[in-house]
Amino acid sequence: MTTQDSRLFSGASPAVVQQDLLPLVGFRDEGMSLEAVEQLVEDKLVPHLMRYGHAGFQSMFNRVPEVGAAMGARVALDHNQGVTNWQVSPGGAALEELCCESLCRLFQMGEKADATFMYSGTYANQQALYMALHRKAEVEGFNFGEEGIPGFRDPSKLAILASRDAHFSLRQSVRMLGLGEQCLIPLEVDADRRIDPDQLQRLMAELGGIKDVFCVVATAGTTSTGAIDPIEVLVEAAHQRGSWLHVDGAYGFSFSLLPECRARFRGVERADSITWDPHKQLGIPIPNSLLFVKDKQDFSRMTLFSHYFNRESSTEPNPGIKSPPSTRPMSALPLATSLLHRGLDLVRDELRAPLAHVRRLKEHLAAQDDFECRHAPDTGILCFQYQPEHVPESRRNELQTFIYDAVLGDGRRSISVTQLGDVVMLRILVMSASVRYEDLLETIEVIRSLGLQFDGESQPR
Image (tube, rainbow, N blue to C red; front, top):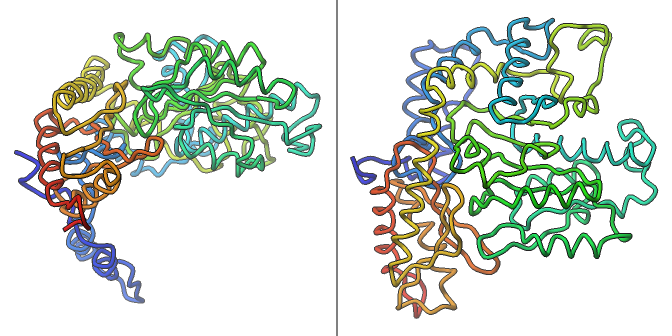
């Protein structure tokens, strides 16, 4: 089957989709049979859902649930277990603690390491920055949880260094922590969109006495290009200055399970915290994200007790004291059942496939006169620009956006666009196991065909 054989989604406009969905929110005094509700969902909603398992889905970080994960998710749904502590779910709380310990061993995190399940990578990044800020406050002699930002002698000096390609959740985090975006200082990247270590060293030296860099963020798989920053160099630079080193590995940390990729992650075991999203490559149902810490004692900065819930005197497993949510789903179960069902060998094989496809595509486009790639792919993402002769350089950004809109509007495949500096790039991401190299080549030909519909001298036809 090629990606032309069926639609990825309906391709309908937002207005049409909203009109179709109105019966699903037309709540009435009299109920409907379960069969009627199910048919309504099938008729009105499902056609407009994105089919993540479709070979044409080549744009975002989503997968359909792996069958072993789906089985675990069904059990979790059947029992509706909150797993904050032993009091609400003895089995769920114990399973989460054991799963986190096992994952720390799997990723070779060290004997003192620990982890907690989170609702998303965004929240994991936010908590990591909070813990970094808390530790900075401890160095200055006060409890950040009690005194907050005013406890710092000069809050305006607080700073976080991260790649200019780092995920926007860092901006959300500094807003919610009350630091403001002025504290987030972007680091320049090299030709392959990785943090430039020399520029980092120069900047940290220049900021000495001007800014208090309490955290450096490395990204293991940026969302735009999938680049993996030089983690070992960043860890060394951060720790030399007493700064927390956080790795946002929401997308890319999975690839550290591959022996042939481990060198790209050298030093990650020395990171103070790491974000990981199994719901991406591993196909675990959302929500399924984790935050790892090098030292389990770091989670104590999150701990709050109450008289009826998360009691201080409790000695049973209590994962809820590691992060803010007092209601937590049984996220560990779908991940555990999936890994058991597939086995690590199959997981590794599935991780290798997107790397191989994207590297082959890079080689193919490098031999084409009308395409240009702007980076060497570290993971399963490739950014490129279509550059036909009939379109002048001044309108190439416009062309990429035109192609993106046309591809998505057709409903048979999905690619994305991003911007690297001043250049708009088309972006292909291989996430689904259904995507083959041949499907990527088919997408390239569709891009060419659409590009011919763009008039380089006037407005697009």
